[in-house]
Length: 100
Image 1 (spheres, rainbow, N blue to C red):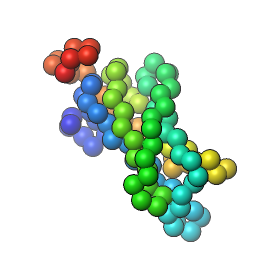
Image 2 (cartoon, rainbow, N blue to C red):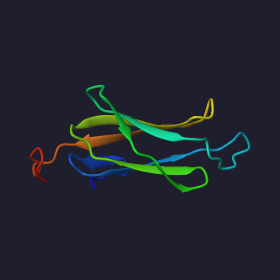
Image 3 (tube, rainbow, N blue to C red):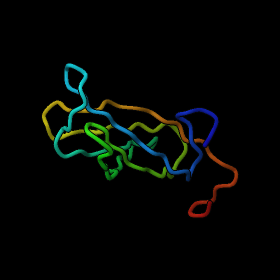
């Protein structure tokens, strides 16, 4: 992993987490969950989301370009989103496309 919590090297697998809560702060399951990642080139990727526990979902993404990425987990229950988070991808001198 790179130098900060939300910083990764190109080609490194990023573990994404989304947490869903109701108005009282209790963890809830929002129906079917999807995870989307938008890369610096504005391409949107769909990531498989897996339930870890009530209200907590995870997915993995391997970035193919350096720069700021944003992700979000959405539920099928209207208005249910776990919010958006950013992470930064840095170029690695050891990275060659398809070979790390």
